[in-house]
Image (cartoon, rainbow over all chains, first blue to last red):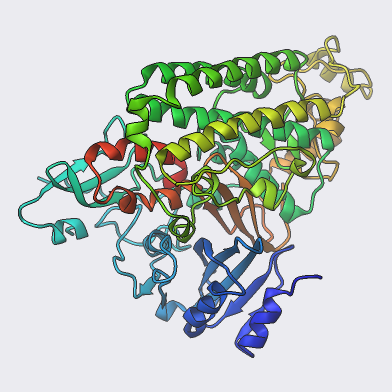
Length: 159
Length: 441
């Protein structure tokens, strides 16, 4: 029997709140609203969907498009060997989204990375600090308005 | 800003830095430790010392040009990084590649996997005091790298696997070189098994040290040998077979306890499986009837002749890489136009060839995939190596994100060493196979 499409399940469980996006060859992609994120991923993580692994978490800057940012989550189900891509659009005026650290442990570093490089703030993250860049670095380098060759002064040696 | 560790440390404990310049910190990573004597109360891992803005750079390079940056991610197995990127692009472009190229890719990526595991285990063995095992494994790695060097022209920064195929066909002496490399590796693996498997010192440092449960490993997003050491059978080559892996027979070795020793053992057994795969692939590799061109017209003579009449003879190219002649293109590169570098023979001798060459490399031309986005992953040395590419229809990616397997693995380090002794950091960190280039990007 052909296994049921995750998008169909999501659409039934959250009517009107999950939009299917068909932009990617062969992958299941869904888009949800920012406020629904925790509810939807909680549903996805539990059985029978069983997306037990947060494969990847990143952000895309669509400047000057609106809304500007898009969070991209890749989930993976070990028992069903399926991947799912979930997207949340974020407006530039309010680049905040709920943190997934309570559900997946690797969300800690992944969200710190996105905070560092894009400046997205994760509500509920226990230790939101820059991951790659140093304290005192100005700006968020992966934003499209950050120039490729901008130099920043070296930080002073600590005593 | 004071770190969390500094803020929360007890007044009677000692704060100490391990790294970023520490011989056991493979590359550059800093572990801040809060110690009570030798016991680690808390720790904080700081990464980013090798951050080279890989993703930002890629956004400003064309799809063809950014391939060389993928070499420098996991610099011990660059061919697998090349493969991951090339296959992601092929998925986006919808390109089929010839069977011979697929098997060449498998052979090369398995050779890289063995050298990756050898490097990881060699460093781990050396850091736990087994210097002999280190030298043995480095010796085996040299034999494999000789094969890689003869085929790709480089030892580490190979850029050999290209979008649409591979850069050059195998050289005539490949079979013999491969056979020698595999024989030597087998012998070394046998020796290393004898040296380490039941070695009391090695067992004391690794058995039941750095233990992670199945659930935690999944929650941390672990993949690859590190995840399989906990007993979870997930291998991208089996779960989502790419290239021709589904036509080859191999097993996925599993561990039980998820400790350092299991991670060592899984890697050792995986190398045996990789050797198996290479041998099968070498047999199944579709034979090519195309001979190597040894005596053709000199390029200069051919250019002179082409001013009057179209040259129809074979051209002898500068032997920068054997096997990249035009005649071999059908075996090693896709037939879809515009995906691969046009043959040099055409570029040098005909105006159409020259135009095609410029069209490929010129800004705003070249490889322009359709609008859309794609995620594709291959099984890297450390686990699932995934690329997420957003294309806006131009010749350079709007966004390229790498899912680096050791990023997820190293993020669990704090938990693994908590409550252990300082000496336990070394084998635990060693068995994770942290590669700075991949972690920091």
